Length: 331
Image (cartoon, rainbow, N blue to C red; front, side, top):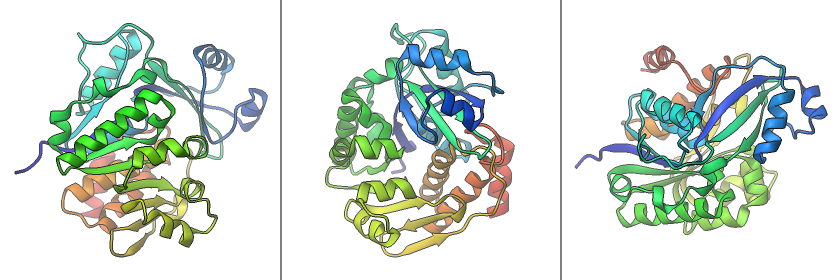
């Protein structure tokens, strides 16, 4: 019997606010370039008050949210469990998620008081993205936000690696994975950011447990987790924790392991101006593909093509007409 959802995702709910800045601004503001850094509300406000760059429109985000929206945009069915507060930002988040066709545990009547999490995304002229994140109420994401019936009714559970930074988020990830495994739902996990690997490796190992069906990571995260600087060695090590995986390689495309063979997927050369959300979109497109009759190689090609389109514009999300065009071109 067909499941209701292709993918059930869990992760931090953050409203993304994207700014164009210079590398010099990051230095002066003492912000570590190219990484995601957790900050408190005062520090985030301080950064916002010093920003004078071009600001782009805000959007509901967080890594897994971007991925679930991508699944929906490509024509799949996705569900997202998360936590926002009953403030203006939380109302915006809930509406934006629903407008993008993603079902959720959120409802306008059940939001708790507090502050919704926000992520300042700083884009430098080299297209690199640097994130400063105040988690707000999403730091309390827990097993209470899980909806077991919907996990059971999904083909895949998708876990965002950023949850490892919160004790309750990590526990929710472990619980969700147990639920999925009990009901023969495949499990997928993304490392999310090299800082998560560097500072929370033990927690990620706990989340991975006996292994996952599908792992997403970039090259730097693969090296950090496997403590290797050789791709062949890293691939060999990842095979011990994941039945299948995809390693994104930036402009070099991606290396995919489908459980039997390694597949090198090339991407089209483009002039990148903003890499924010590229990995999230790759995961969403690939998850859509493998849930809808594509081979791993075909699904990864869709992911690479989508991501290479995304990085030529500002923002972490494609427009629907772009998604339609990509599907037509790759049909």
